[in-house]
Image (tube, one colour):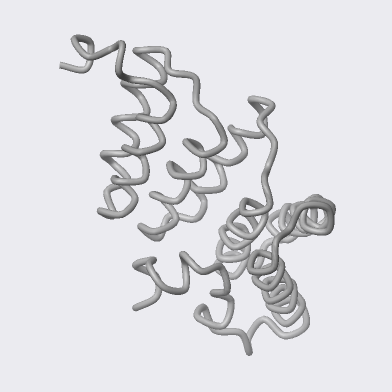
Amino acid sequence: LLCAFRRYVDVVFLGAVMNIAAEHYDHKRADALWEKLVHKLGVKPNVIAFTAWSKAHLLCGRPSFSVRILDEMLSDGLPFNDHLPPQYVQALLISYHSSLSTADLCRLNDAVKSGDVIMKRDGSRWPRQEWQQLKRAIKALEEDPSSVKLHDIFHEWIVKTQSVMKTW
């Protein structure tokens, strides 16, 4: 069916269906659509499409998959906008909270350093506020991991209000 409508399938359509899958908490559907549209039909994804695909996994409580998707976006040469550093760092922070591994902490700190540049240069008010809250949560987790509960690190709006993790 998608092949019959190929001329209507573009990056805007890709972003829209990724967002719909995210809103329905259906990461499997998002992955299947990504495979068909990007890998089989050749739609070239943009930042918005990658962000929506990553959001599908984050909303479903799969932060490590969300991180992998954004890493893929970066490796494809697409830049972060001011809304992505908080989403990326939030996913990394959840992963680090679960593992407390040195490798995850290093990735998290690297992401914060890169994100600081973007947030200072391009950040609008709301993402900057989330950014500062995330940085405070990282500091608290580094100082005393046993005192920081999972919900204490939820500062990115999507995770805090829409993710399945909000009820864990």
